[in-house]
Length: 149
Image 1 (cartoon, rainbow, N blue to C red):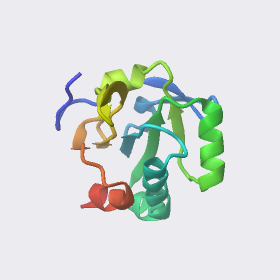
Image 2: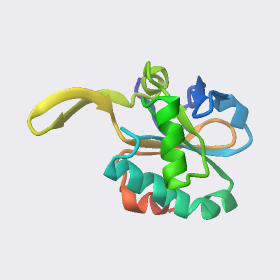
Image 3: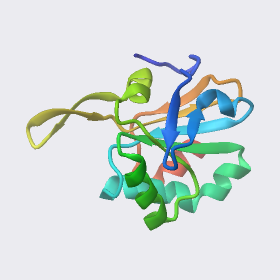
Image 4: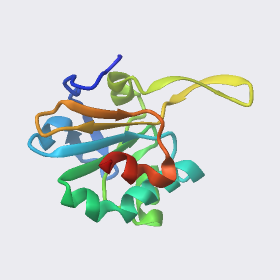
């Protein structure tokens, strides 16, 4: 699916690291940072999560709720949250349902090989559930600055 700024953000129903149901519609009236990342405990993904963690208070002051999404299991997310002391939930999307809704599961290339994986993307969603911004070129160590620009 090709989403654009101004589009209604697709609602989803998925599980967080503790098996709790998470729906985008639960956050109506709040601004949401919905970020898709490839894998728990990898250098780039850890840098991105820690940048959001270290600036979490500034994000909250601006009214943002942060939700991370990857294909990792709930157990993997629990370990990642504990190890990195992350203050926000991580959604487990092993069947790529949420990824497919947002167009973040696609073809990638590394070392000359082509494979399917998560396209690192962040969606900024306004209080009405509309997409306010899409960050495709995520700078993992400066991600909060990209969000709060």
